[in-house]
Image (cartoon, rainbow, N blue to C red; front, side, top):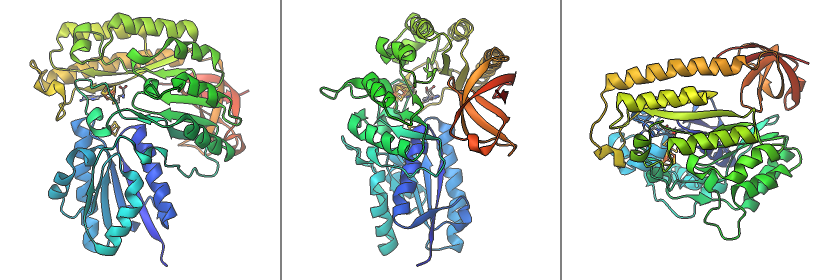
Length: 439
Ligand code: SAH
Ligand code: SF4
Ligand code: F3S
């Protein structure tokens, strides 16, 4: 039998990246080999994101490109998965008639079954049901030989309904995997040489909140800490309202927990935070940051901010800037507010104009660059423990790794360092990385 090739294109968050890994693992069992060359593909999957309008637009342009390949290869199968598939369902098929499969976020475990059906009958399939229990949560991926880091989904879905956000509609309600399931997966990963796991969930602090007798997120971290071979634990994302005292204490007490937290603040104005339905105030957020820094003085804190949320005045924006100056984030992802179907903010008045949004984003990003560089420069002359992940992008004589605080470090080193934690002297700091020398 001829080999069949699978090409996956992924847009969106780490959860989506991991979903793509899961789909690749499922199809590999069916005899599909992954390819990076779309022209070689027998099956193309576009794994999509709908968080902002721009991400959703990318889907249509990519599909336009993929459809043309079908003119040359009539048995090419094209599927769309992820959040745009979940959102549009049938409508996507109407917009793009040569599509074969629309696969929602809770159905990726059924991919092999659907592809077999399409191969046999040429039928078109749309499956976007949202179930309470999602078997796809536990699909195990196939790490590559020598892979140092891996994603592990611990929960998915979101119950928070922030006024701007589509995720609760597209990923459904919060659902956690069992602790046993997660620990088994991580033990297996450790067994094949993975050193660092990143626990994924839209809101990891809610892990197992509704599960009776479970010890919650910190309980899970405590158990992962005991797994031999795993040297580092990361997680993403946390909601500021849910980060607990015990997690804050964990940054001091858990030796494998990395000194980094991504804690999206969204705005520094209480009025906007309330309109956003974030359920914390600027004061609450500053208090959590202070406690985190008390527990772990070196912790790096990164965040997300939205500019131009409906009703955001110059004064509200200034409060965000003031808060940034007070906190000085290690890094910040900032976005212009983007209107999304079905969300509460859609109906809010006092929309902010595009030029104003652009100007606010520009000011905010320029300020953040100063802060990022200042934070990175503070590491010059210091010794950092770096987990080596692979070769540097630009130079095969160099290796790259990360500090516990999630900063990228490049330094001269041999490939046999990959997977090791080594001491590195930081010589020079840039905006996006550090240059070091192994000690
Ligand atoms: N669950 C994560 C957020 C996932 S979305 C959390 O709550 O932290 C990642 C980021 O995208 C959000 O933090 C927010 O800053 C941004 N975002 C979400 N919806 C958006 C919208 N409609 N317009 C602009 N940015 C948005
Ligand atoms: Fe979206 Fe808010 Fe849920 Fe994050 S917590 S996924 S921003 S609704
Ligand atoms: Fe995008 Fe869906 Fe993730 S909307 S950010 S891919 S949860």
